Image (cartoon, rainbow, N blue to C red; front, top):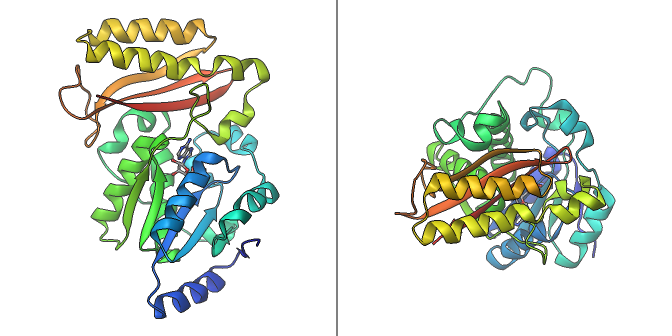
Length: 281
Ligand code: AMP
């Protein structure tokens, strides 16, 4: 059965308050649409963990530091609704711009520290946009649990921090990255890759896996990074924005995987910015 598409906040609120009165738990899966198996894995986890599930679809202008990137972001609402239909979710919340940011909207949520590095350093304002919209979605849906992908590892840490700092009574749950068979992390942005670029794209993950193995065998961070960057660039990527080994919890930079660590990367391929991250050890 097709999930009901809810566009107004008042309708969402009355739906949720009915569920809450009956003592049902509510899970939310925030997305920007162009749904793929990565998103659907979050929906599956939410269905398993909660009585009621809301999927949100909102392409949040505030988190795009580049207007052209916002313009060309894939918009596939009908397809998305179809992909969700087997999951029997309770609501697909698709607010429009003025519902999220009515005239006079003036509040900005900014998480310090964690957002100074990696994507935060390369995309000014991005995480303020994410933190602001996620705070609103948490308040609007009143969800007990929220499901986010490890694919956006820094975002997962930022959202976890903001819920704790603002005493929002929601449990943030991280779910593993879903990949294509060739290792490429699924992403809505993969739709923007040309056929040729799609063939090269998995080299990012392959180079990261090779670097992680080398680090675990005691390899030097500078040497292993240089080798990985060379491999990524040979595959046709034009710029590696970062390729860092970082602590899982604080995201501070590490020279060796001496504590729970993650390798995180962002790189440009044929005009498309791809990100990926993997556990090291
Ligand atoms: P987005 O629509 O790109 O904003 O992503 C919505 C949610 O889906 C975020 O929590 C992402 O981390 C998650 N997500 C995106 N791609 C994947 C993936 N390949 N595997 C798991 N989760 C993902």
